[in-house]
Amino acid sequence: MYTAWVLALGAPLWVLAACLVARPERFVWPQLLQPLLWALAFPLAGIVWLARYRLVFDDDSLRYRSWSLREQTIPYDQIISVELSKATPLSRAPISTHVHLMDGGYIVIYTKAFSRTAIKRLYALGSRGGPNKSFKPNPLRGSA
Image (tube, rainbow, N blue to C red; front, top):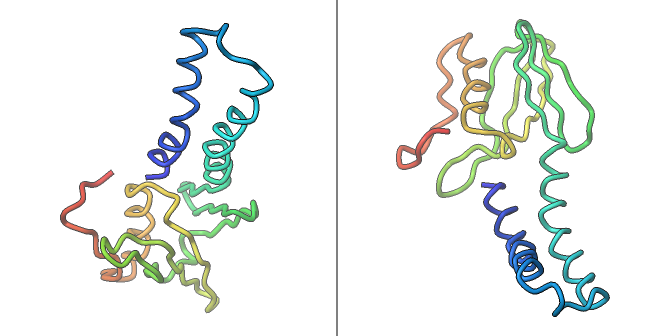
Protein backbone atom coordinates (compact mmCIF):
# COMPACT_ATOMS: atom_id res chain seq x y z
CA MET A 1 0.00 0.00 0.00
CA TYR A 2 2.76 2.44 0.90
CA THR A 3 4.58 1.63 -2.31
CA ALA A 4 1.49 2.71 -4.25
CA TRP A 5 1.41 6.03 -2.38
CA VAL A 6 5.11 6.64 -3.00
CA LEU A 7 4.66 5.95 -6.70
CA ALA A 8 1.55 8.14 -6.90
CA LEU A 9 3.13 11.06 -5.08
CA GLY A 10 6.30 10.66 -7.13
CA ALA A 11 4.39 10.78 -10.44
CA PRO A 12 5.16 14.48 -11.02
CA LEU A 13 8.85 13.60 -10.86
CA TRP A 14 8.45 11.01 -13.65
CA VAL A 15 6.53 13.48 -15.84
CA LEU A 16 9.16 16.13 -15.23
CA ALA A 17 11.97 13.71 -16.09
CA ALA A 18 10.24 12.70 -19.33
CA CYS A 19 9.84 16.37 -20.31
CA LEU A 20 13.47 17.06 -19.54
CA VAL A 21 14.64 14.20 -21.72
CA ALA A 22 12.34 15.21 -24.58
CA ARG A 23 13.18 18.94 -24.65
CA PRO A 24 15.88 20.04 -22.22
CA GLU A 25 16.32 23.44 -23.93
CA ARG A 26 12.79 24.57 -22.92
CA PHE A 27 13.47 24.50 -19.17
CA VAL A 28 14.97 27.26 -17.09
CA TRP A 29 16.78 25.60 -14.20
CA PRO A 30 16.03 28.16 -11.43
CA GLN A 31 12.29 27.86 -12.17
CA LEU A 32 12.56 24.08 -12.35
CA LEU A 33 14.40 23.55 -9.07
CA GLN A 34 11.54 24.21 -6.63
CA PRO A 35 8.98 21.86 -8.28
CA LEU A 36 11.69 19.23 -8.63
CA LEU A 37 12.51 19.41 -4.91
CA TRP A 38 8.82 19.18 -3.97
CA ALA A 39 8.33 16.21 -6.28
CA LEU A 40 11.28 14.45 -4.62
CA ALA A 41 10.26 15.33 -1.05
CA PHE A 42 7.07 13.27 -0.84
CA PRO A 43 8.37 9.90 -2.04
CA LEU A 44 11.63 10.32 -0.12
CA ALA A 45 9.76 11.08 3.10
CA GLY A 46 7.75 7.87 2.69
CA ILE A 47 10.86 5.82 1.96
CA VAL A 48 12.71 7.23 4.98
CA TRP A 49 9.71 6.58 7.24
CA LEU A 50 9.30 2.97 6.07
CA ALA A 51 13.03 2.22 6.20
CA ARG A 52 13.01 2.67 9.98
CA TYR A 53 10.68 -0.28 10.60
CA ARG A 54 12.10 -3.81 10.91
CA LEU A 55 10.56 -7.11 11.93
CA VAL A 56 13.08 -9.97 11.94
CA PHE A 57 12.28 -13.59 12.82
CA ASP A 58 15.53 -15.17 14.06
CA ASP A 59 15.97 -18.81 15.06
CA ASP A 60 15.30 -18.11 18.74
CA SER A 61 13.98 -14.54 18.95
CA LEU A 62 11.94 -11.81 17.37
CA ARG A 63 13.61 -8.46 16.65
CA TYR A 64 11.48 -5.34 16.17
CA ARG A 65 12.50 -1.78 15.37
CA SER A 66 9.96 1.04 15.14
CA TRP A 67 10.01 4.72 14.23
CA SER A 68 12.12 5.46 17.32
CA LEU A 69 15.01 3.40 15.88
CA ARG A 70 15.25 1.44 19.15
CA GLU A 71 15.47 -2.26 18.44
CA GLN A 72 13.85 -4.71 20.83
CA THR A 73 14.76 -8.40 20.93
CA ILE A 74 12.13 -10.78 22.29
CA PRO A 75 13.07 -14.44 22.84
CA TYR A 76 10.30 -16.73 21.52
CA ASP A 77 10.07 -18.55 24.85
CA GLN A 78 9.12 -15.25 26.53
CA ILE A 79 6.05 -14.72 24.30
CA ILE A 80 2.76 -15.78 25.88
CA SER A 81 0.34 -14.45 23.26
CA VAL A 82 0.04 -12.12 20.29
CA GLU A 83 -3.20 -10.13 20.13
CA LEU A 84 -4.69 -7.56 17.81
CA SER A 85 -4.96 -4.19 19.56
CA LYS A 86 -6.13 -1.95 16.72
CA ALA A 87 -7.48 -2.65 13.21
CA THR A 88 -8.83 -0.68 10.28
CA PRO A 89 -12.62 -0.37 10.42
CA LEU A 90 -13.58 -1.89 7.06
CA SER A 91 -10.93 -4.43 6.13
CA ARG A 92 -9.98 -5.36 9.71
CA ALA A 93 -6.32 -5.18 8.68
CA PRO A 94 -4.13 -4.99 11.78
CA ILE A 95 -2.62 -1.61 12.61
CA SER A 96 -1.05 -2.49 15.95
CA THR A 97 -0.50 -5.67 17.92
CA HIS A 98 0.31 -6.48 21.53
CA VAL A 99 2.93 -9.15 22.17
CA HIS A 100 2.34 -10.32 25.76
CA LEU A 101 5.43 -11.48 27.65
CA MET A 102 6.07 -13.92 30.49
CA ASP A 103 7.04 -11.09 32.89
CA GLY A 104 3.52 -9.61 32.61
CA GLY A 105 4.47 -6.80 30.25
CA TYR A 106 3.73 -6.35 26.60
CA ILE A 107 5.28 -4.76 23.54
CA VAL A 108 3.26 -2.84 20.96
CA ILE A 109 4.22 -3.68 17.38
CA TYR A 110 2.87 -1.41 14.67
CA THR A 111 2.06 -3.97 12.00
CA LYS A 112 0.77 -1.50 9.42
CA ALA A 113 4.25 -1.09 7.95
CA PHE A 114 4.78 -4.83 7.34
CA SER A 115 3.65 -7.32 4.72
CA ARG A 116 0.72 -9.66 5.31
CA THR A 117 3.15 -12.58 5.29
CA ALA A 118 5.16 -11.05 8.14
CA ILE A 119 1.97 -10.25 10.07
CA LYS A 120 0.70 -13.83 9.71
CA ARG A 121 4.05 -15.13 10.91
CA LEU A 122 3.90 -12.78 13.91
CA TYR A 123 0.40 -13.99 14.82
CA ALA A 124 1.55 -17.60 14.44
CA LEU A 125 3.90 -16.97 17.38
CA GLY A 126 0.86 -16.44 19.58
CA SER A 127 -0.75 -19.69 18.50
CA ARG A 128 1.89 -21.76 20.30
CA GLY A 129 -0.08 -21.35 23.54
CA GLY A 130 -3.45 -22.06 21.90
CA PRO A 131 -5.48 -20.81 18.97
CA ASN A 132 -5.26 -17.07 18.37
CA LYS A 133 -8.64 -15.75 17.23
CA SER A 134 -7.81 -12.04 17.44
CA PHE A 135 -6.64 -11.68 13.82
CA LYS A 136 -9.47 -12.02 11.31
CA PRO A 137 -8.14 -11.72 7.75
CA ASN A 138 -10.49 -10.24 5.19
CA PRO A 139 -11.64 -13.06 2.86
CA LEU A 140 -12.03 -10.58 -0.02
CA ARG A 141 -8.37 -9.60 0.05
CA GLY A 142 -5.58 -11.72 -1.35
CA SER A 143 -2.65 -12.71 0.76
CA ALA A 144 0.78 -11.19 0.28
